[in-house]
View (cartoon, rainbow, N blue to C red):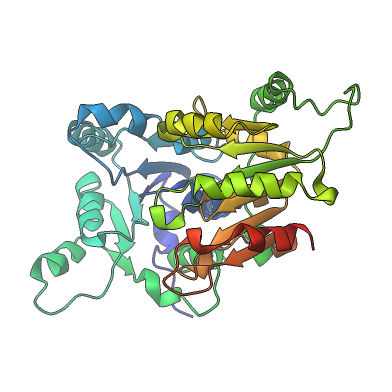
Length: 373
């Protein structure tokens, strides 16, 4: 087997490593285990993470939403991450963050960024002009002079696609990256997602259920049915499920004898809450409450933990369902099967019939067939 890309003699001399990544919540759900494994194998090395905001913009109107990115809350509570660069959402703050990072004199910088890897190779070297720099490198043509020049900034490089084999889950891909980078070998069982929810947010979730009249306590005057969480939203419209389908599903579940008394929580992204409220007000469905983790990331896993079942389109929610050990029905396209929920015992995937189909092609009848099986 090839020697690890970051030599052990380099690791033995460093006190901190900066990882650069354009992280989505789903990415961190599985990369978290890799960082944890690295920390356990190198307890004297502090982990710093640069979260690069690919939606970086000069538009001040967009900064409020970007500044409240939920991942920052999760990283802030991560015990093996010492420092996070989370102000890269505007060009000015991006430059300030570079200056701040350069003052750290990083002895080692690792870019895990697969989008525009030449740009991140340059960024890594800019931050650590004298450090050991390793990053992602995708094959380029002979005439791609700028890209080839950028890759020369790296002391070592990893082709992220070189480790991918048919049938691999994304957690296996990330584990393979860290094996090539640092020689770290992890067992498949150690790749299951996890989330440590602070007690404050667990308590707030229970309070929220009481305010909604969804109290799970034994003193409830009526028989309490199951609590079903539905997430129809994703960043990409191709992965969303129409609200009309959600209403149809609620009606179908409510009329099913096995699911009598079910209460419903519909997850809504903050920027769509006003539209969703208007829509559900028109439909006036009983025992449905709209939810959004507007204050803190941990509101989401805390409320998921209280549910009996989660139905979600292909986004971070279906991975967090595995992290809190609540059964999930995932609605997915045929594209990117490596992102299916990893816990097969607690997950059922309903896949759109055709390769080009969006998630909206999945019908309520398909979901009900799973629920009633």
